[in-house]
Image 1: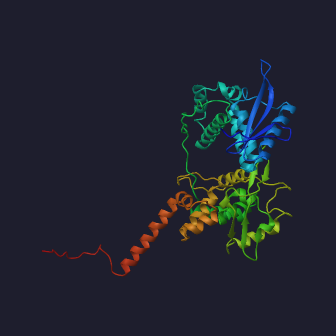
Image 2: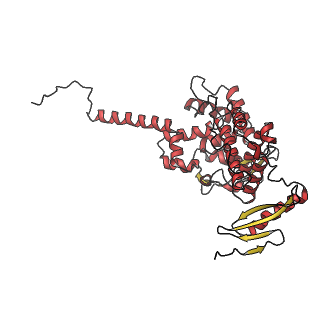
Length: 395
């Protein structure tokens, strides 16, 4: 005889059942055309988790914000998934806001915004995503991933039986992406002289990025107690992020797990750091009229500076952006002989491959320079095959 599954009431919010993989709950969300109750099922690992989901549905019904599964659109479901991920601490606030921007982008298309998931079909969705082919590959990737993730969730929640766009290929961008490069030594010296002699807004942040390799979001999130002049260290544990309206706020953690790190204050940086601390506010190192500073503000100023003072050598290939300051620091470190593993930690990369792949050109140049020095050393020892010599024939 099959073993019956024990049934338990879920605090009045619906019925909660024990299953093999956890718990399942049901709640009546409406009445169909035949007068029969429409039930919604949710699952979870614990009774508490299921009851929280049931309560959320009940509250949405009361407030009139509940969307029946047969009416929900891909954008509406995407928002629900993102909110669940945020509330359950699966993602950070900054990630949530960036993903919401992707949903907003999808919502600009009338078909994607208004069509219930059950009525979505392959051809119109493909037509929509092809309209994004003119954007950067990063934007295309975000849109594609968001659509596929949402449709898979729709299948999981039994809103649809199968994903109609499961075989949809991700288009490649039609844009030609120019690689962001580091400043040359001449460009770096020109920028350094401008930032230290002219009255430039955010000059301290730009210099700090160029001389420590910190991301600008990490720099703008620094507090005074993150700096320890006695130990000569800077603690990086937060980053600046943007809200839905573009307002800056401090994220609870760094950009990545490895972004949480302690970096040394070098002899070069020490006088700059003392100057920054002297000019800083009560809590944060960098504020503008009592408000937090976001990366976009610094970026716009950086672009004005390099243009006004002719910092960039137009003959050198590659794109120069605010992120070039971080690349510049890394490149100088490689040129000075720093080991990749040490550089990985300072930059906060999660994998040594990221460091090696990002700065492969600099590592290759450094390798060639060292090979050239080795050749000079061999020549000094008298090992030089350029000298004429008599070849012996072995009989």
